[in-house]
Length: 299
Image (cartoon, rainbow, N blue to C red; front, top):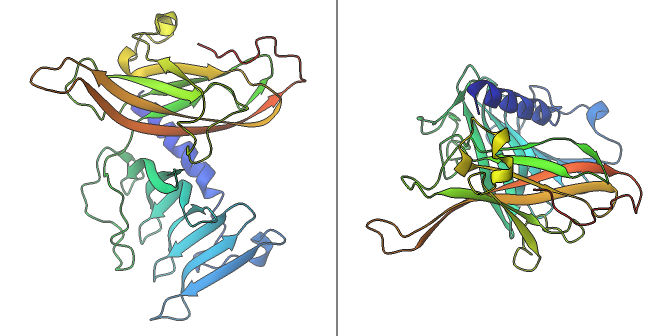
């Protein structure tokens, strides 16, 4: 993946996420911007009762949450589940209103997890590593950090948002942020549910209970090597699924890095790296009976 490709992806994420932010610089959301039937809760700074600290817009399936600096500039916004767990894309801004960090959250087995993050400089260029301890210089927010400070370059690309029942959704996983270092045998794999009718739960809590299918990296999957001559074959994987029925669908899965020994100067026989989760929403059009390759995964 080139820097230009990655910059395009970050800009796309920013544009999607910005649609959620309908507030003005004072933190107020005009009544005209609130959908009919929605409610909101507002908390103010104790030291300044006229300034909004946090605003929560309550929706049917989730809550949209906004935090504000004491100078009325938006600090961060994103979504929370009804149990208070962050999920999806969260945008974080500095005190001048410049987007400086994008975090992608998943809820995994009941716990919120920072899955990927993109760190930006003041020109909004993606940087590999956040050297500053904190750019959110206000006592309420200065410790708002995650457990890593490196931009995650891992990428999931899908061919379409709408497919017919007779074709598969196709995806490509690129692992560009390695968690296993200095091991020539390290590779990735992609795991999804075998059938879309018995999918991963949204928090992957049923991972041990459902049948899955594993897609190997291209150094093993020789059938697709010819399409990726410039890619690291150990860190690229092609995957896909044919759906059982038409309608709105969610494809969930994860990419995992691993390495099997024997290793020099190590007593262990395997190293299991991080999981990077993904979720793809799409629409499958067609009628029952159209899919002659019922439940057959694409490789």
